[in-house]
Figure 1 (cartoon, one colour):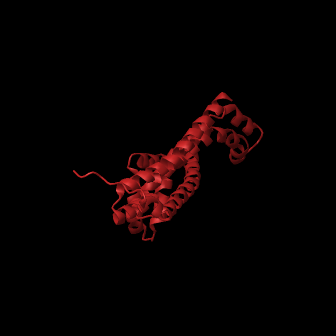
Figure 2 (spheres, rainbow, N blue to C red):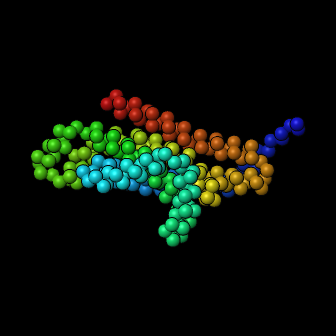
Figure 3 (cartoon, helix red, strand yellow):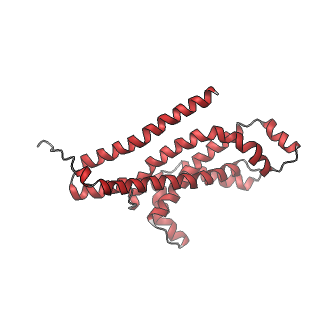
Length: 221
């Protein structure tokens, strides 16, 4: 076997190309987090609704999403959804939609747990004061629950940064896809994907470490 000759110059020579992919990765992650957070809140409210039909829908969506691979879900949204509903959807929108739905199911559990940590007496007091359920949530339940849900939401953002690499399978130009394209043209997969792995680690590890410190401080309080 011939010894492998490293050529790390392929990275600085194509840094702009890879950086454009990283920008797309962060864009997908941020947009998906916003969409998934809103959708997750809706699912959590439906799960705790007094209306049985709403609970059944929320629970059914959760079971389907949790028990199928996220990659299959992305491919289904990109290839099957346009056929079923006769709509056109590009690769970026399909990736954001698929990742948002997947993350929303887990974020809904975060919201549900956060809401349930609010003492029942506080909700009962809101009813005694004549507040509507919406007013009670906005003024009483929400502000208390948000403290406990912020660290898990931040952790979900880190997961989304990593999950965004799956968008490469539907040809979205995020950093993993850029690496695949560059690797096929330069025949330098070792250097390119090692660099991409280091970039992911350099972004995710500080965020993960900061979240742990944040959670520890909240626990002490």
